[in-house]
Length: 360
Ligand code: F6P
Picture (cartoon, rainbow, N blue to C red):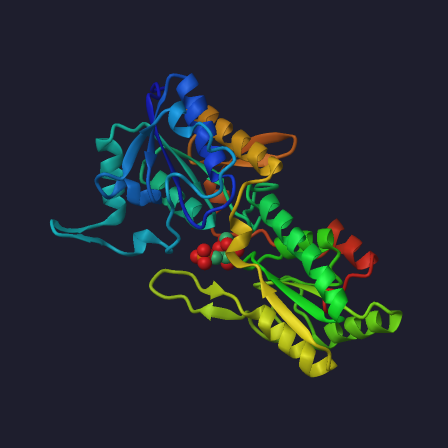
């Protein structure tokens, strides 16, 4: 097996709290194994444009464990392979350029930290001969093959805190407060944040909701003397027979941007119940700020394991959390799929048991 002397690390897709913790762990564990690390800026663009790489030493990553964002920058603009690169020197195929620059920079392997999009692109580059290991990142918790991803716990903690705050104002005004959370086509953040925050109604993409059923739960609460209601709605939730609410349609290789279901729910509730409703969209606040202790630890474990796999020559895989271990899972088993909330999940059953309505 060829000795690994120099590896590249990049972060791609939307940011998630814990990215810096992974970079730090990769740099420190590689350094301690005698391997040089090159940081690639703005995902795979770091291999395309000159001046977008920098050597990372332990000193460069000291103190970043607790910071959100990513010191390497990231891009979330869909599939870069779909478009050729146009430069003053000519037009190049993106993939050819990445493979060429990987060789020119003297890299032996890459650690690619990203969500489903970045992992799918990484899989393509591995098929073209680049030895690499993927690290799963998303606040949405929707990557298959891994029990959890860093960023999710921080997003859920933030959502829980927001719901706690909304409780007091909802109660004071006897209103319905609708909280829209992220998660794309999976309801993990809504489910976990909703249960932790004591929401009365949780609407997730996996269970299309009936607005009449939502209003029924609000009326039941009113009858019991709790004249306020907290509704947590995932951005990908949809009414029975309806579709997701989209802020911006997909175009030119980019994915559709979800958003607006919170406003729609609040409107439906006001019209059907006659009660005052307000809505809040937590948006990118869920991705900002410091990672929780859980996410820092998971991210550090992911980074360390990625380097261990590189040193063992295990490529074309993603580091997966399969408690109590971290294990490599082939990227081919992961890409192009979404891990949604199973309807028979213990947490769904428990939520129902304690009286939460899923609008069905
Ligand atoms: O995948 C993470 C995520 O935050 C989703 O929950 C959300 O739909 C999307 O990214 C938002 O993306 P952007 O940052 O491009 O608006």
